[in-house]
Every structure is written in C-alpha cells, then in structure tokens.
Image (cartoon, rainbow, N blue to C red; front, side, top):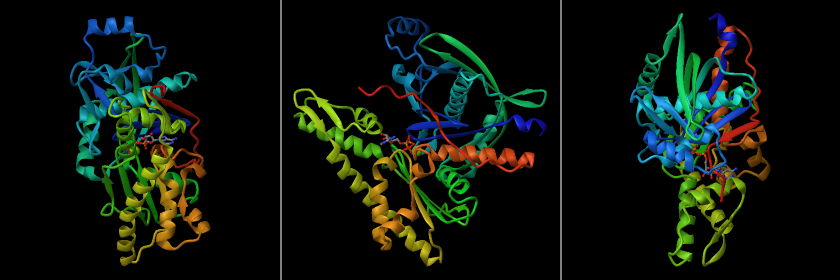
Length: 405
Ligand SMILES: Nc1ncnc2c1ncn2[C@@H]1O[C@H](COP(=O)(O)OP(=O)(O)OP(=O)(O)O)[C@@H](O)[C@H]1O
Ligand SMILES: [Mg+2]
C-alpha cells in the first residue's frame, strides 16, 4: 500500500460511560451515549433560547445516521434527547448502528482538533479496543458492518461523516480514508503502552486492573497474550462510590436535597471534595471517599489474589501489575499496599512491581486509548517495513463534560 506513509494512527475505545479517541498528542473524551434529536422546529427554538457560552462541537454534536435517515445527538448533546441509547450494555456493543456512530463522532471530533492546527485527517488506521466478552465472532461482524458502509473511491475506502453543531447550526461533511482497522482487548492497550515504553519491547507478564466509572476489568497478560479465561469485567466502579456519597448526603439533609451522583463524580478530577448542601451547609466528603475507595480496593485485590494462586498452580508468575482507568486516581495507593501485603513485599518492591501510568507520563484514564494508537502505529510501521516510534505524550484533552458547579 503506497499511501500508507500518509496514514494517521488513531486509537479508540467505547467505554461503558465514556468513549475515548486519540491521535498524536490529542485525545477526545465524550459520554458513550446517543439520543434522539429534537424536531426541527424545537431545535430552532432551543438554539434561540440556548444561553450556554460553550458552542464547541464536542458539547453540541449531532451525527447523521444513514441507517435511520436522521440526525442523532451524541455525548453531552443528548441532555436534550427524549430517548437515550448507551453504546454498550454490560460492556458489550449494544447495536452496530450506534457503535458506528460513536466511531464517526470520535474521528470527526479528532479532526476538528487537528483542523485547528491546519492538519485535517485524510487517511486513518484505527486501533480499536473491545471487551473480552464480545468474542471474535461479533467483532468480525461489526467490522464487516463498517466495511459495507464505506464508500469506494478509486479503490480507496472512504468513511463519510455528516455532522452538525446544534448550537451554531453549522453542518460539516468530512470524508476520511480508512486504511485499516485492528482490534485488541480493552485492557491490553495499557500493556502495549508499557511494553513500548518502560519494558523497551521486552515481554513481562503483566496484570492489568482497569477501574472505570461503571465497571472494573481484570486482564492478566501472560507471555504477551491476554489470558481471557482469567479476564472478567465486574459491574462496580467509581460510580458505586459516587452514588453512595450522593445517598449519604441526601440522608444528611434529612432527605430534602439530592445531589446527583454526577455532581460528585465531576468533582473528583478537580480534587474538590466539598459540596454545598442547601439547608445543611458545606459537606466534606473526603473521608467518605477515602473509606469507600479502601473498601473497593480491598474487594478488587481479593479477586486478584485468587487469580495469582491459579496462575501459580500453572507455574506462572506476574512480573508487574498496573492500575489504570479514572479510578486509579483514587484506588492506586491502596491496591498497591494490599498487593504488597499479599506478597509480603517491602515498600520499595511494591513501588517497583505496581506500575502507575502517571510515572510513564500518561493519565491512567487514557493509557488504554494511547495503547490502541500504538497498535495502529505498529501496523503502519510493519506495512512500511520501518521501526515503530514508541513515544507518546498527550498534551490536549477535549472533553464534553460540563463545568462542575
Ligand atoms: N483526575 C482524576 N482524579 C480522580 N478521579 C478521576 C479523575 N479522572 C477521572 N476520574 C474518575 O474516574 C471515572 C472515569 O474513569 P474512566 O474514564 O476510566 O471510566 P470509563 O472508562 O468511562 O468507565 P468504564 O470503564 O466503566 O466504561 C469517573 O468516576 C471520574 O470521576
Ligand atoms: Mg474504561
């Protein structure tokens, strides 16, 4: 393939709560949800009444859905939708139409960011993360679903994206040549990023723990391969904690004021642990967060330790652990300590054996996505017969999250 040298490697994953797409030093993050659009006249009056100064594409995005012949709101814009569909259910792609829209949205939003620098995305190779439970069958079907919807231009496969900024009423048509797509298990992305950086391409058995908003995933990688029998995704995540905090605050206010769990969640990245509860005053949930995080970390390590025993019976040992996902910010230290206690490690050994993605210069929340970009980059290098560039750094994060209030 001669034009492979123009191919831009992109990484993407559809999480249960947020989807992430990255390319070079940019990542876009948006809620994994699509929704019905307002009627044309309703949309017009919404636009007139809309007082939000945030007119960015990522906050006000609609993508045209050919399969339904209608617009669909994506991510934050679904705040105006009557009916919502999450991209995934229990970690599995719910329907191909929506997942395809998610990919279109991700590529479109990345392109918006690149265009600001005069570098539109013309050719893309996509590295895509999926959960273990999908099975290869579904994925092959999904990829052929996508392929069937690409438009042929002189033998090149083009992905056509029609998007609308609902706040400004601007419509944009983008055509991107999709050179290839490759997939890997979700938590494997983090392993790739570590393999390319810290491991310097040497293979170490690595146990990945990915703690997200709605779920946590475990994936041991033994001899460079995901051990899918020991992989699992558990419907517990930061949401479990933020929901509890929200409920306790509700009780404290004698059931007068409900602080939605989302308000609690949004505060975590800001390291703001105080909330003003009308009639009660300022509620400080830092102690509560600490305790809940400890409890969850304990439950997680309990599950992991039984895998370690299983592996050891097979004669396998884990060289390194890593804790990733947005939950790592709150749970990393406790998980490291508990693993240390389980193995009887010294503090130094624990620091050495449990890898914090932050030490590799990447937010634990983004390391999987970065890994899928490396997967795509690896593929490009392979086709060009060149060495792969193993470096990565995310400098621009574009998110559809509202300002915390
Ligand atoms: N810098 C941060 N500090 C503390 N908590 C954070 C930070 N960034 C994100 N979080 C929390 O992490 C969670 C989101 O993590 P992540 O993006 O890994 O989840 P997700 O991938 O969307 O969910 P899932 O894996 O269940 O699909 C949210 O609960 C958020 O509050
Ligand atoms: Mg996740």
